[in-house]
Amino acid sequence: MTNKRLFIRLEELTEAQGERLASLGIDVSLFNGCYILPGFTDVHVHLREPGFLYKETIATGTLAAAAGGFTDILSMPNLNPVPDSVEHLQVQLDAIVKDAVVHTYPYGSITVGEMGEELADLEGMAENAVAFTDDGKGVMSDEFMKEAMIRSKELGKLIVAHCEDENYPRESPEAEFMQLERDLNLVRETGCPYHMCHVSTWQSMQLIRTAKEEGLDVTVETAPHYLVHSKKTIEDHGRFKMNPPIKDEADRLALIEAIKDGTIDMIATDHAPHSAEEKEGGFAKAAFGIVGLETCFPIMYKYIVEEEIITLDKLIEMMYVNPRERFGFEAPSIDAILDSEFCNFAIWNLDEEYTVDPEEFKTMGRSTPFEGMDVKGRCLMTVVDGEIVYKR
Image (tube, helix red, strand yellow):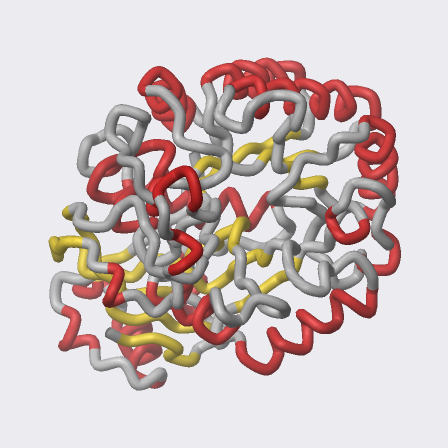
């Protein structure tokens, strides 16, 4: 647990801090009773550009991030072209420079085309790739994953793993935890720093807990939908279809315990927009993926903090401190942020209650498992590098 102050009520600002906000064009008197929180960092976002601009663009996806209080996001590589080489990564980097309104850091893929048949140019991409992942697919080859870990460790980069063993049904817990078990054995062998994406099963949590007790360099994320929903609360509708699928109530409760005891390090959204047509047809036909940038904090605040599962400080650690420190970024206190020339923060009304309406979203995606749910906490303004990039 960090000792630094992570949020501040606007009425508690010092005179100097009030003047700093005024210099940014912010009238503090308009935000009575509101709070300033650090800009969150989401390590798991699908922006869909380049290649799939009918689902999302960098402009719309990063605006959605800003609307959710995020100032930094890490962009997954299931794109066209897949960022598996310097040339292919540059296509995404150019689009980010052109259109992103929040800090956006791309992943490089582990294998060429995310096909699992040949390792990507990890060395060439290392300068501009935040880490390496084939998210959306598990790396089936033990040999390729081991070699990727060896090379990634030499480059000082994380391997970020979507654990999915294709020998098992996708809906089964084995599909997740059997590949995780394989990966953890490779981490023991190689010493590579490793991060697990979107944990969803109690068996995986047991493996992660044991690995951490051994001292392995391992972290893990989960997403709000695995903490709020279980099989008993979902419907046969595309807005509940994502990968990995939502599991049993026992899994949800295990994940709740893991955020309470600190085994789960961070909350990520796995924001993955699709067109309306792609999400039609229920579970049988709908594409995998839901949107989450604009609902993440309000869901977590209403159903996790307000239910006294964790504190607001702990939630900010999981959405700001831990992801930043794990991926090599500084995570200053709220006071240090406000003192910085290039400050990154968001103003929140933590008392505002409302119902999730996808038609209000900035993202092009509309499919969310939280549609119609009551939430609490509204992002009113987001500032990136001292510039207002979103205001409600």
